[in-house]
Length: 241
Image (cartoon, rainbow, N blue to C red; front, side, top):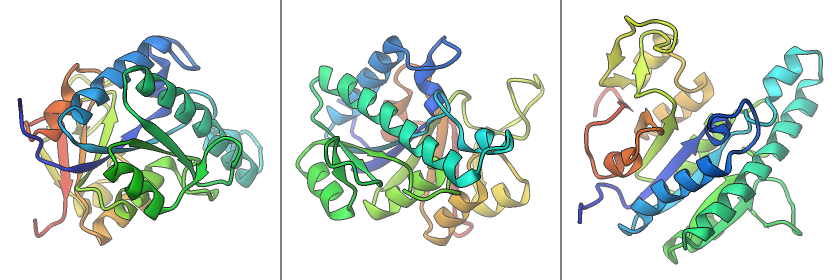
């Protein structure tokens, strides 16, 4: 059995990942796939925390650009992440993974409210934890929430699972000559304005020297490969490391 390189990880998933082949909403096939991929690392004893976006249901920024008040739009987006969180919890539990959802917004009839003490307690007991409702504040993306929660639970690394195999100099979905970076520094990402995570998320990771790994979610076994230290995707780290 391969040995994991990291004991505790924060896995950042986009809401779009749950769409599968659909144009919107939640694909049960994709939920099952995700749950099996995550089980492959929990079976190795890895403690997993997760943050998931809501782009498959509602994007706060898109709503605001359409004339909606940004705070109202972001609040809707945070609630949409809870739908995804509860759906993912159910899929993980079908695979036999004890899972807890912690919300940044008080929802006592749905789940517990987030605290880093509660999160670490559950993770130490062997449960996977999903962090819903973003940061609980408008004007912050779920990328920023992912970095923030990763820092709060003292994750060894933040893994962003996306639809392409790492970070490129331009969109590889639109440009066949796009060049992939094997490694980048946080300064590189900010200076080159690479669309990996928003600037607030990258700056937060940089200030706390928290490594980020970006890789393709749709390659079976990639989450396990990443956690076991195999060369996948793009590593983003501090200048001095």
